[in-house]
Image (tube, rainbow, N blue to C red):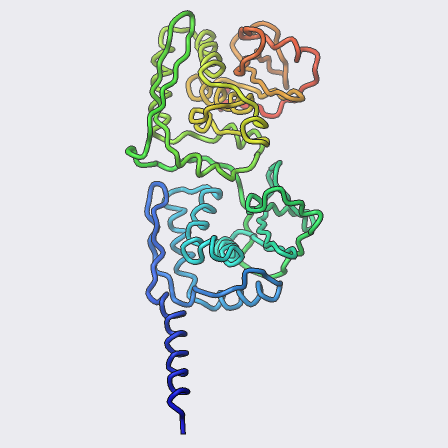
Length: 401
């Protein structure tokens, strides 16, 4: 004979399990992502629990269970969205972060949220891996680029770089070394790249206006630049990448359209040398200067669009902006010249100007885009750098030149 209390407890247990696991039935992942809306069905089996502090056994159990779930429709939708909107790997990772956040909110269970990011990225074909410390879950991905400010580990000759180091600020992983969790995911083979070759086409009504002005040859020039706050979000955790990747980050469509045509108009009656001089002084004087240490407390390189947005910027930021403007308007050969604590630019003209700098058989003229103690003209370098060693960290040669 079944006692009434036992019947009630059994019914309560069935109800609890139904609520816990049945609430995800016919669930959809739906959220706005910059220029589009991600919207896909998510099978109820996609929801898998995990403890907040993980062991290797927990990770393997999570993977094994999720690997048997109906996850493929979500992966297919993520990859289709990536292809349709031409998302770089970095932006695709932001898409995955949003999907993982909707499945398992970061603030509720960080470890579980990280497990979903890892699973979705790996099942998208990227060689993503996990490692555990006594209290942390570290998320790595295969990357063969020069990235300076985040930890990595080597497996043979392959480098795996940490994607979630920003979630553990001021952590010394040498004191509590992560132990890799070895799980074979056959489709996870691709290297991840930080190169960004296209920015999203943000909605025009999502932009704000920013006024800039600077004086050139006693004439004041005014600019009303359209900027989008989502750009700051995209680059919030973006690392310090190599100069080629950094210098070639494009602007979004509306920002480009509010600046480049106006600059071209202002340069209409100027010859090439004077036009480059104008761009050099615009980059030098239209923005307030502050070092990264003062501004951010660490090294951070702003993209050209971020520099337009930022209240303060330093020599790295201005070098990248100057390069972008000269490339878009004149498309001249250029080099980035790195001194011990400063970076500047040099441009190749038909005839060199001032003190030349020669690199790989080409002759360039200095163009200093950052304020200095002297009012430097094209072809001049600040006195404090004249006898200092330097390194050319990037050379741009336009096609056919």
